[in-house]
Length: 524
Image (cartoon, rainbow, N blue to C red; front, side, top):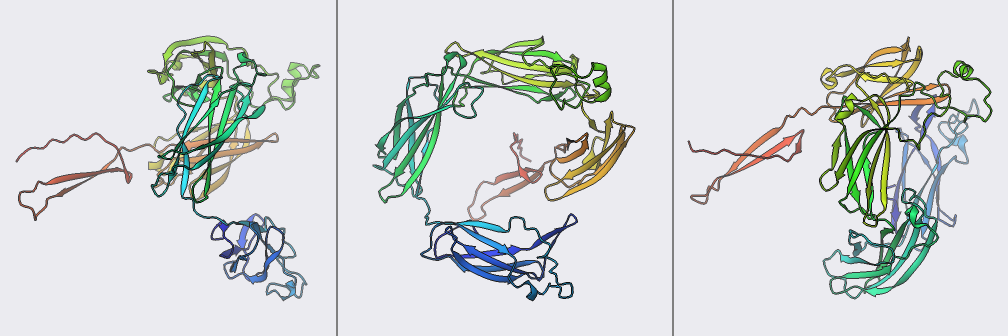
C-alpha cells in the first residue's frame, strides 16, 4: 500500500505480488487469478473483486474508503477465486490448478488504519532530569508546550498524573512489583508555554531499605490548547534510598593481542553524570574449561555413572558445574579511581596473566553511605591460546584481505570430521558454501568485495549432537588514512582592492572530517 493510515473518503492504492516457493526456490506466479476482498473492522465487505497477475507476477488496484465508514483496522485479503476452472493456468486435462490446488498460504492478508486525524500543531517537551532526589523529597518537573508555528501556548490547560512503579532491587528493574497513582491534578501553561508539576516522592514501605529498591515516578501530561487540540507526553523520575549507579564496560572475551580497556561510568539514578571515588578490582576465578558443551540435564542427587564412565559416554559435556558464582577468586589487581578523572583503565597488564575466567568489580559509596557495586565476568586469552572450550575456532591468516580480495582463515576443532556452513554477509547480498574439516583442520579462502566500505561479517555454523553452533567472524577494514583536499579561492573582481579568500574542503572516503589545520602563508 502507499501508506499505513488513511482518512475516510480517501483513495487507497494497492499492489500485490504472487510468490511461490518450490524446492527451496522462490519465484513469481504470472497469469494467476486472485480473489481480493477488503472489509472494515466490523467485517463488512468494502470491496470484492478478481484480479490477474501480469508477467511479473503482480497486480494493482485502487478503491475509495467509504466517507461515512467506521474507523479502525481494515483488512485486505487475497484468496482462491470461486471459478478456478476459468483461470488461464488451469489444466483441464489433469483437472488441476498448478497453483491453487497445491498452495499453502502464508500471511495472505494485510491491514491498514482508517482514522480521522490531523497534523499536530504543538508538542510537549519535559526538561531533562539532572538532579539527585531523596525519598519523601518534593520533586519538581518542568515542561513546555512548544508550538510549531513559534507562538507560545499560554494559558493552556495541563492535566497530569504521577504513577509510582516499585522495583525491589536496583539490579532487578525489569518489571514493577507494585504500581500506584500517587497524585493527579491540573495546572496551566504560563506566558512562555511552560508548566511545573510538583509531587512528593513517597516510597513503597513494604520494601526493605537495605535491598536498595528503586521507585520510578512516571509523570504523564495532557495539554489542550484553545482550539481543542490535545497532545500527550510523559517522563520518568527515578528515586531510591541510594543515589549512585556504576557501570564498568569491557568485552566478555578479551584477547591480549588487542588493545583493551575498562570504561568507567558513574551517574545518579536518572542517568546524569555524578563524580565518585571508588575501587576497581579484578579476580582470577578459574582456568579455561576444556569442555565446550554444557550438561543437557542437571547433576542428579544420586549419580548414575562414575566420573570415568561419564567422561567415556559424554566426552564433550561438563561433568559438573564447577563455576561458583559467589566465589570471586584470587585478587590480581586493585586500583582506587575517581570518575571525574578516570574514564578508562588500560588492561595491557593482563598480557602477563594466566588465561582463564576472571571477575571485575567496581564499587563505591554514595552520599547516603550505601555501598554500590557492579561486577562483570570475562575470559582472558592470549594471541596463540587454544580455545579448547569451543567446538571450533577461526583465525585469520592474511593481514590485508581487502587488498588481496579474499580473507584466508584456518579452522581448528577437536572433532576430526566436521561440516560447516560458511556465509558472508554484505548489505545487499549473501554468499554461502559448505566446508569439511578433516582431522580437525581446514584452511580456506573466502572472497571479499574490495570496494566494500564496511567491515565484512562471516558466519561459521554447524549442528553438533543436536545443538546449533555458530561462530561469527568479522573482517575489519583498516583505515588507510588517505584524505582528499580541495582548495578554492575567491576574489570579488568588481570591487577594487578586495581581499582574496581561501576555502578548503577536506574529506576522507567522501565524508567530511574534523582536523586541526595549520597554515603558513608567505609573500613571494
